[in-house]
Image 1: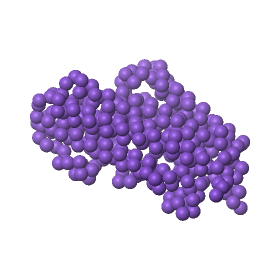
Image 2: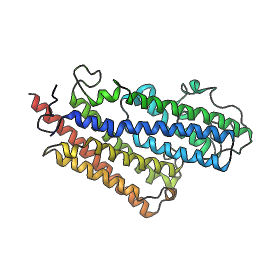
Image 3: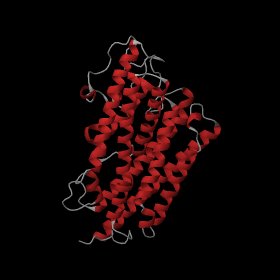
Length: 337
């Protein structure tokens, strides 16, 4: 059966752009998150069984890699991400601290503060299930090896790492499996349970991109406004991790839009909107790439200027993508009359 292009707005079948983003970005992105979370769990087990500088460094490196992998797919918030609140459970900020050193999720005397097992943890509030909770437990202010608090922190952090791995593995599986969500998004059809029409799938993709640019821009605004007051920036406690996450998120947004390939796929006059999206998200990513993660704790004027440029570019990218989506939808509706 021959698939027709979307009237005169695109120069190729819509399915080719949808398949490109599924195969070129979404599936590899979630596979990378599953791989990173697997490494994080393994590194946590090794460190807690044999704490040393080497095993400690492995935890830190695995955690940073997992933060980046999560940032790269955090804006893909539809489909499998919403099942059992998976994405929310991975990146919801940890509870507010009740003191500089002691987070309330671990008792200061080392008494058990967390659930008994991974199954029980999965029923707890998202604030203690994901990477922000792991940061609080084992990364930001790790307990002294050999202490009672270290034993409980390790027990709890081990559960969180296993929970993160289970969620990431489920996300990867749901996007990757034959006949699953990835196939549904890539191949709309009348009998498709989610996307019976191609325009619905394309709208979903562009809407996720717009939401991602808005969320990233809002986080940058809070970053520059709240840091002087020492406020938590979210989703992590430490500014360096927030910036690492933010850079991965914005870089991912650019790669996501590039995978959709609407710059080449759209016909005039729609192409100008796609070109503006691509240019703006590229500017945002380039501005954030100028920032050294280690400099984000006390940003210089140059760093703040780069953040401001990135936020403005993100807003432009989101506005242009929203306009592109609306114009394509309007043209398609006109064609159906």
